[in-house]
Length: 118
Image (cartoon, rainbow, N blue to C red):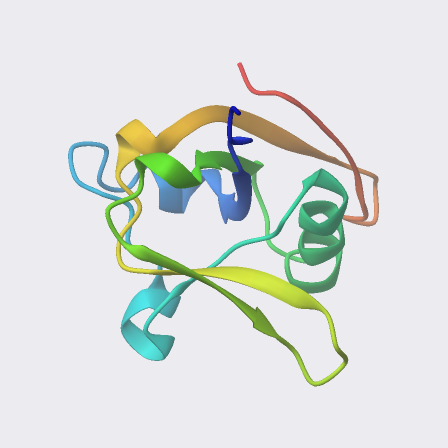
């Protein structure tokens, strides 16, 4: 029986993703909280982008991460509201990122859809 490959989504401003293209990706939350925030699917990534990145200028990406390619632990943890999110407890190797999607936004910054980047 074949196991389903699980993809995680991580929302990031393009400038942050491009800041150190040679090394693993380490967002500020890794240092401050000990993990990288992710979402379970594109719809959840759009909700995160809309809630937390609406006023962030410049292009916004959603990294599509193959959970099996990560060397760090992934823990699925609940929020006080009962929603479960995947958290990556270490840096994200760039080889684990299998796709880059752009978060298309409306004039007010609202996250509308995910489209291929480039």
